[in-house]
Length: 244
Image (tube, rainbow, N blue to C red; front, side, top):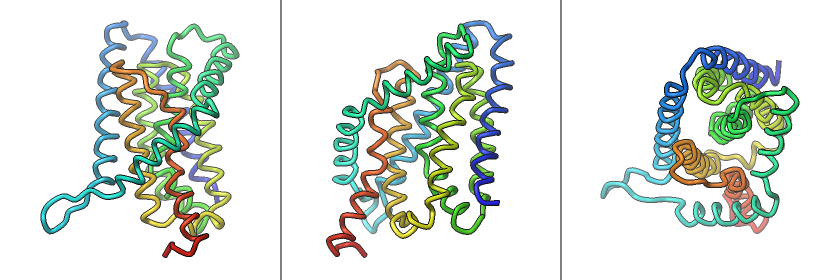
């Protein structure tokens, strides 16, 4: 069944968040705090490793950088677009709406929703897995992602509460859309384009880690369009006959 991978992924997030929320209820504040610091550090280095993997290649003389100008352009253009669209504010309002709807007293409810939504949607597995599911009905990648996201949801929810479970909705919409549009998107989402998108995604995950550690406050939501700039750039190259 096409789309089953995304459905399983969403269920895994909800189940993991429910388990994490149960754990959270019996934890002292100091334990919740150290969990958040641990999660922040883990997210920081996941993002850093993903970004460096996309930015550097092994060459004859050692490491060489690639896609640097495209990465910078993606962050700048995507950031401007996201700021104009006020994506971060929209996500926070959605989180606050859900918070009131479920009458939650958790101070981190909206943070859990926004943080988990961003982490689960910006990785390469979400794009590649949804494409495979839509094109050939192979949900193996998304099943693997479901396990990872479910475990992560337990930890996120233990630190931030049940708002993490609602990140299943953006995952359904994002991955579901790619699955449904797989036939249209596949010619454009080449290995190189996905690598470039993953590079930008790694940088955004790194920024999420900085936010979780309260080192700074980056509007990661407003930078989300940056992920899609390499795709639009490749489409433009094809339109002008420059793409291969």
